[in-house]
Length: 345
Image 1 (cartoon, one colour):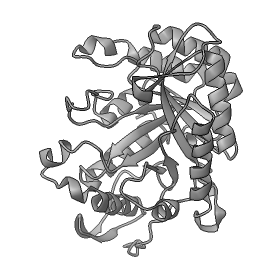
Image 2 (cartoon, rainbow, N blue to C red):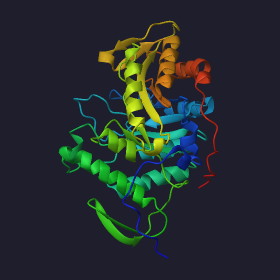
Image 3 (cartoon, helix red, strand yellow):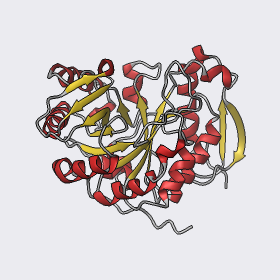
């Protein structure tokens, strides 16, 4: 029997809607902050060998009890940006990591949904979700690298509109049964999209503004991922708190939706080393005491998850991860929730 046409409303879902989602529940709870790790653990500088052994360390991240690992989506290395992201295709790599891990949430930070077709993105996402037992959390973005859009035959100036259309299309695809979808990005009648996600849906976290208003983000995002502002002074977390509060005041019905932020850190072995910005504030050099003070300030500001990138650390990644797990993670533990579904495919 054909299902009714999905509603055009694609508003974000509340905490209750994802209560059975293993990845979401591991990462998010009101008034608490958890920790994740951004990949790669060492930056690509023209030599792929820096990525060797990374999956072994991701398995360690899982066993240590971190809430999430994050992968970035960078189709092309633009020399003007000088950043290749985590190099591998994010969904292909997450499938590989799904087989190496058991509990850690698998997060995209962020999938550029304005570049690729929504059916292909949704197919990759729900496949990862099934392979991981329901651990996928999707950060989504409109894209910030102008070189990528003409490479895909698209207009960079249209990315904000394509982003909102793509988010709606992906959400409609996840409805049960046979679907009728009519979108500027594509249309079909009476077909079913497979596989479905393990839970009712996959959390979709909007990154930055993605070309949308704060009101739109409050209505349509399942959560919000933003840059942290300054991380070496108290004013940065204070400004972040103001931004989070303004967003949450616009969320329909006052429902809880999580906020996430991130920072690239150079964690030095001196615990008392002061928080010092490097590379124009892009990297924070700090000892663990300064890092913990920052995380506490973020938690007080309303941040629910902090993703740390360690690829610029001067110390070996295994050593940095061990210190974070031993000294920092116990103060910001991952949440207990439903176990990942059986995924013996």
